[in-house]
Length: 163
Image (cartoon, rainbow, N blue to C red; front, side):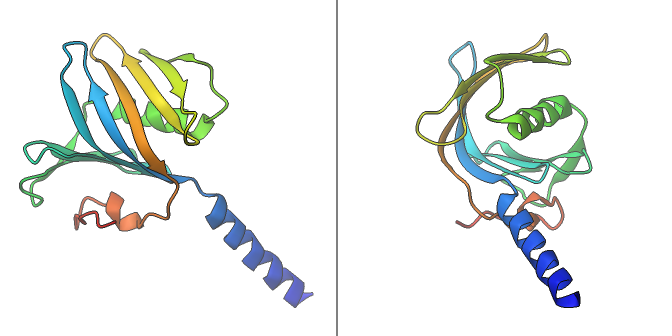
């Protein structure tokens, strides 16, 4: 009986780790004035790492304890907890958790999301985000489901991405 129980536990944990969704994508933020920002997004277990490619910008870390941190790309030691835009990240996680069972248009809180699904990979192609404060489209490219080191989501110590 103990052997069966141990086998069940091992099988459960292996299956849980395999079914845990984690993804890496390149992204483009496109604003109505045609301004474009590019970067890399990692999503895993209710956490997001949103890293702009531009060294003059920053990396945002949305942690599972619902905190949002800004890390300057030029000075990785400068880490700040911020309050603005947390709702966008929490809502992106809601959309991610519900994928692919989503309507093309979804309202969550004060945000309106328009969804386009990719025909190339099993993820979003585009998410348009509109509210009184923000209006942009987020395009996803080169998405892969990969195993991601949980330390990449921690603000301290900040860990560089190496793929």
